[in-house]
Image 1: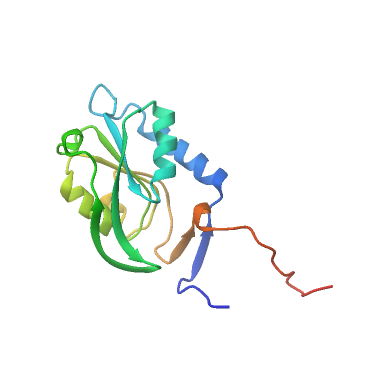
Image 2: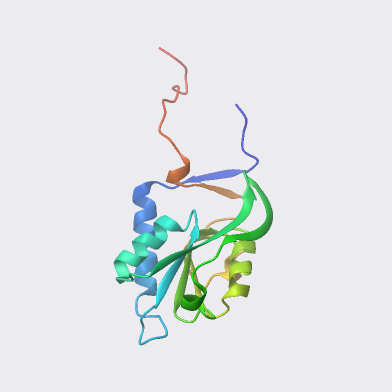
Length: 166
């Protein structure tokens, strides 16, 4: 079996991402520039889509768009590039917009999106030290050498007992 090139693995269940995304919503509630309100949410695809949906529901935000940024090839980081941008008229300079992702790792993705929308508010569920300067709000910090396994990347399967078969 090939091991991942990471020292630590952090497995996140659907229940955990739901709880943590709700906690993110509560932290963001009333913090928008329009008497505490946010104009819209932009999810960074694909990882930001589940947290963005939960935050949108919790904060009753109906306008939700996406930005698609490719910064990984499998598990190797590459130069970030925008594949699909949100509605330009809605975005403006980002004022009143919540940009949501599941995780900030190196910060390259958020740095690129922040350069496009400098006044947006950037929120992630999880943050690693190298990237957390790019995030305005996050819930949990994990070490840089931790690989987070999200539930949408996993499948349940049988595992042999530690001591072997009976």
